[in-house]
Image 1 (cartoon, rainbow, N blue to C red):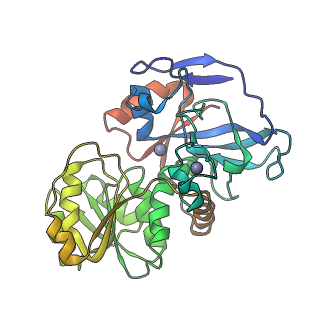
Image 2 (tube, helix red, strand yellow):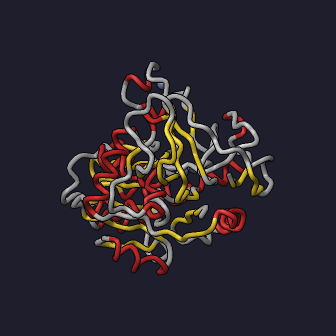
Length: 337
Ligand SMILES: [Zn+2]
Ligand SMILES: [Zn+2]
């Protein structure tokens, strides 16, 4: 099969012919229709995560959708021809404290698609049946691909927050994650505030369901949100410590800020501000398999789809370059066809 292979960190991926995997017992082989290009993939190919034990060579890609081509012995929940999605998490031990308490995405023994085992920048991907998800009819396979990482990342904290009808949900950063966050929060009945920079995406945010837009070039985020009563929930999807600092004061009483972006620099906030408003800052990492199944049902019921740029798999290095320069508008998806 054709695959884009990372042979050395910091170097372009190589388009190569490699053996098509054979599904072992309990495994499903999926013919890839789309694989989203996540910001994490840049960290992977740059070698930022080499300490996690990424083996080389590796095929990146963890937002994979396609059609089941073949199944291994003992597989009962999938048959050839089924629509399937392969996410980041493709194994968790089921025995550790994280797994037992329903936080399997924190399992230290986890295997990760396109990070520790070959992923979806290829014609085929193989994964254990228990971690492969059904993609409902009615969702386009290419548009559904980013739901496997960007989508679940915003859906899980929204779902965890409970009934959001009439609550103020702010989404800071309107990119691959943020545009889905606005769409989902709006479909859940929240009053949605999009926090963005510059006028470029204001119309888009409104068309996705944002009721208000805050342009951080024109007004102070904290002050603007406070004028609206403060955010009950704020999804931070922009990778910026300054954005984090400016969002914290915008939380309302008992408000929660959820960090969804891998911001790897220090930020400064006033802890007393958390005390007086009983505000919380939490992190959230992808979601559970149950969250994923719930998200796909929700996406199918509410017509939620990712807005994507489609690129052939052979253009992978150009696409990674565009992402690095900030020139991918929302989400790029590679198609091997
Ligand atoms: Zn991702
Ligand atoms: Zn575990």
